[in-house]
Image (tube, rainbow, N blue to C red):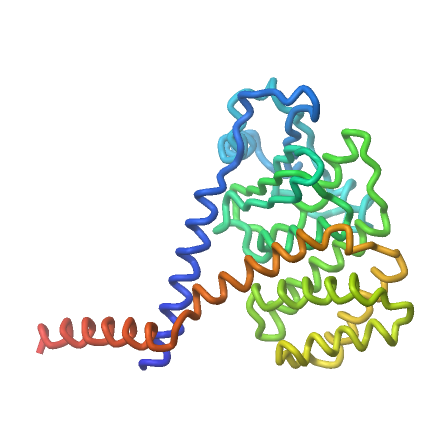
Amino acid sequence: MKHINKIVLAALFSVGLFSYGQVQASAQNDEVINEKLGVPIVVYGETLTADQKNQVRKLLDVSNPENVDEITVSAQDLARLINGNPNSRMFSSAKITLTENGNGLAVNIVTPDNITEVTKEMYANALLTAGVENADVDVASPVKVTGHSALVGIYKAYESKGEVLDKGRMEVANEELELATQLAETEGLNDEQVTELLTEIKKMIAEQRPATREEVEQIVQEQLNKMNIELSEQDRQLLIDLFDKMRTLDIDFGQVRQQLDGISNDIKKRLEEVVGDEGFWDSVANFFQKLIDSIRNLFK
């Protein structure tokens, strides 16, 4: 019972800490127009009803639609940009605010309860793979969705500004997001472990610059061993396939090493906050156990 209480409490504190971070990093408003970088772009999923679209406007703090560029992302865009299913339903929406070079990529999920599979770190990792840098990205949905279609909306936003993102990098970024959520579902890993695994492999690739699939496999296995993660052979091969594709696309993760370090540090800090000191969680669990016992005694 004590062990279970500790796990439950850790989960509750994790949700609380995550939610607090989301409140602090709310969507930016559109009162000031950036004459150098342009107005923010708001991308709405095409499946949204008129009422849902207005709800998303409020969620993304679009108080003056004239000060943003509004576009719609469709299932046809999904098929065109990353060879996705042209019959998909698109609810996830995003607001993209370009920032100065060197500011990096900041992702905020405005509705964490409604984005059920993709975390902000997963978005950030995938967007860096696709070549998206120096932007503040806010993601929202009025209904519960996995969150995958928001990635395509962000790509379309860049396309609407004349930015050319490499199709191969966009496709492999989508594969990365799919594999990240799959590992979290099937391998018993939490989101933080998955993100740390992908991020650390990218950092090792940036350092070692592997020239062959065998070298990629060695990097992947070294990181799995370091994190004490055991994957099924099928998932291990999918991980190797993913990073071998990144190698053949010659993605230079050294250019975004600082942002990868930032993702790693955020994840490690969150894990430390959740797990904390063993004695602390023992005392918290004991407190709640005594509280439960006291309530029980009232009804004896």
